[in-house]
Amino acid sequence: MTQAASTGALAGLRVVDLTQMLAGPFCTQVLADHGADVIKVEAMTGDGTRLTAPFCEDDTLREYGGYFQSVNRNKRSIAVDLKTAEGVALVRKLIDGADIVVENFRAGVMERLGLGWETLRESNPRLVYGTVRGFGDPRSGASPYANWPAYDVVAQAMGGMMGITGPDRHTPMKIGPGVGDTIPALMLCIGILSAVHRVRETGKGQFVDVAMTDAVLAMCERIVYQTSYTGVAPGPEGNRHPLLCPFGLFRARDGYVSIAVANDPLWEKLAAAIGRPELGTDPAFATNAARVANVQQVIDLLEGFTSVRSKEEIAGVLGGKVPFGPVCTAAEIFADPHYAVREMLVDVEQPGSAQRVKIAGVPVKLSDTPGAVRRRAPMLGEHTDEILLAAGYGRADIDHLRAAGAVR
Image 1 (cartoon, rainbow, N blue to C red):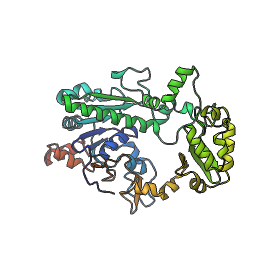
Image 2: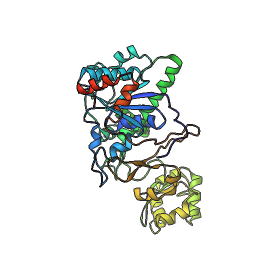
Image 3: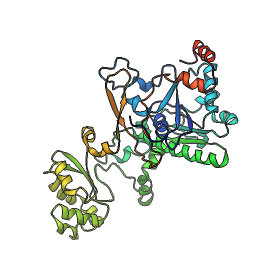
Image 4: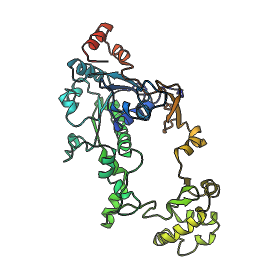
């Protein structure tokens, strides 16, 4: 693991993390990457993703697999039973000493525990309270689906993303990674940090609410204005772009490459690079409007060049001249020097295994206060004593909480 030269831009912020699965943990991990002290409050059995594969072959401990490792680094873990009065009181004490609390329970759960926003702000008026739910919190607008559970695929489907993704207009398709979770997570980060900035000016915290479906729709912004301006709802568009040409994927001898021509000067450069400079001034192709009208001809011309060459050969011709990139497999990413020099493949310890594993690094690079992967994901309750001692509990108090089954 790399050691940051500083403690990160968010050093000094304390976050009580009551989230699980992907959206909430991804949000709090971003805060932790940049120096926030994130206390992950888990149930006595732990976040359910601890049980999710893959595991290392030699891992006999099975404390957690790749899923949990990849979205919970840089955090400290405390295991608490929120079904006990002692456990709830403990979490309330932690929140009273925090800057931020983040949760992704269904609406109403925190209120039933006596840990709702209105209650918490009475004793901690500077608190920023962040939530991410499938359809948002009723405080911001009571969705008719507010009580529906939701995961990534639900947000992708209802937020409009699947509706414009697929091989043809009749076949919607799920996006590969869990963007229905990670996009809302990033939106929640923006909201939380905006509210933290406001606290510094006013001393007053606020409630930050992100609906997974809303966040996905915001990222699919084009479907809103296209429908509004034209009266026609866009559908799946395969590997092409409905408004720009050429802009998408093209067959290579050993896979696919992406080529993105967003204006006419780029088309001239592309035409020259593939040895067809006359196409740059041909009226049938010289303007984007003409290329969109003759899209299949453009595709056939380009694939006549790309399909007989390897991705590496095409890169030698187009790389650096026009927006271009090969469609990379994970194996190719692992071998690509770009990701090594950018520290985007980070080695971490895997408890229970003799081998180290790789997880994705920190993509946001700050010049003076860089974020970093400073520690692996925590084992369940690994920091319980440490956290409680810092919160003012004595050893006898901690022993009592354990005996009462309130903590692990």
